[in-house]
Length: 268
Image (cartoon, one colour):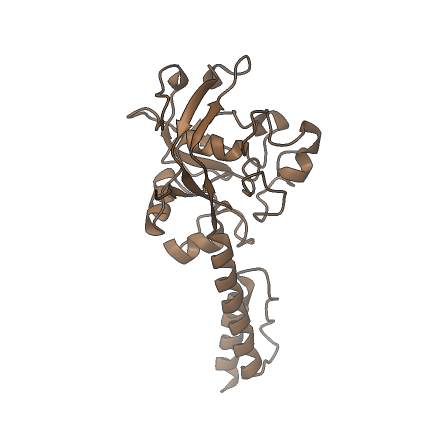
């Protein structure tokens, strides 16, 4: 191999190895044995395959009632009301940049230096498309809240003084998204159900929907201009990490702090 082709191969290898932030970039001027280069590529491929399998895991949320919303805080969270949901599965982790790139062949994220961070700057319909391509769907708002609560009816699924053990939020995130699964999970074994990135859910947003929502498997209004998001995000204060907290976004806009996770029906 002549010196020009060798340098070109090393540059390409360096970019490939740097994708995950796992292996160091290879300096352009540094010669590398072809066998070592192949070994690095093999290690990268093995790492990606292992991570894609781990990140695709889901947990089953059992059928039954829970109390959705809360009274006396924000009008769009009231009234607190009982909701029955059929059993469903939901992703253990927020969808990562690695997963999104594997399926969609692009990475829209702002924080591109972290392939195990949640994908963000993804539009609502892009999230819908991703979930569909992997045989899943976005969770409904009710499903998301039941999953986030982890069987609890408290403001948080942890004691309020323990938030730093469970969530990336405004006081500890460093002003950016963080790798998924680094904080403690809730009782359903789900990570980052509060903090890190806001998550698209399938429902159109309506401030007064809880007043008229059906008591069984609510799916939101039939139409609207805004989509609901849940979670609290990496930039929010502790108050926004409450599991009942609701917000909304324009579905065709890309937000630096909004990602998603997928769900699917549980077969009977």
